[in-house]
Image (cartoon, rainbow, N blue to C red):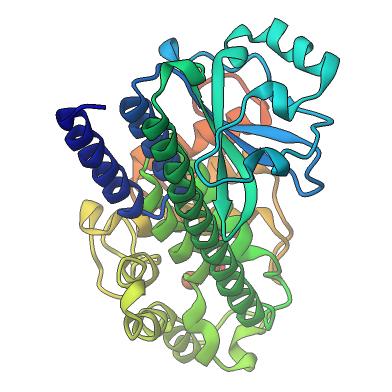
Length: 376
Ligand SMILES: [Fe+2]
Ligand SMILES: [Fe+2]
């Protein structure tokens, strides 16, 4: 390795370290590891394999190759222990050392390039939990390059582990938020599972809008927490099966503001607040609390309003029985432009209809119904 190659290698390693440590999004981290490893090792194909918990199966976690082809082998069964092959730091191994006998030939027959790959351990504190492989046999790379490849494996392992921990932490947080919201909602015996369903309907609209992951996450949280402000509402009002009095209605109408106020105390929840605060605004400006109109209403709130009402119509309530999904869509369509954003209603109809494969493409036939009240 000459001087300029050393400089280039150090620069590439630094770039890689910066890239994979600048995000905790697991997919971005893995993409960066694959592309930077390919550049650093000057190799067209890079593969990441993870050990299953019983340590006898290696599964392909991610793969980079020209033309973005799927790997022909998805997992390697009945692998032998390869720890003894990794005695020294900076040791790479080949597939032959990982998979014994006939199995090796079977895999190489399916995917010949495997025979030309070298693998470095994904290792944290001496514990190997997978391998990263690059195309190009031992002879292609200098000793220094292989050592660098191995230390890159350790770095990649830590980045993947961190991103996975962060992902599971976020999952735990979402489940905790959902449990909290359900605990509040469960005071109203008719709304069990409401938050989860509203979140799922919102997710379907978000996918149709091709929202990025960060925004989808804020929407999911807003959907889960949209009624959190009901925490302060008396059971006598919340559980009442008859129509609410004017005064009671006013109390009930406070829940978006109460919810938004609770969440505004948490810095990380700022992107969630608008969806919670405005989920009872109406497209025609006749909603509450602010009487916002059209696109003045934040997008998340316009989405939640649809999901919330759809769930209210399709579940049993004290004042009316659940209706089927087609009738519920009819009702939403009837109220587009007055209560709801018409373009989002159109999208929602499509995703619900596609999901159930219940109807032909296009909007459902419209049945006009009398005015109804849904506590959402
Ligand atoms: Fe609701
Ligand atoms: Fe609400």
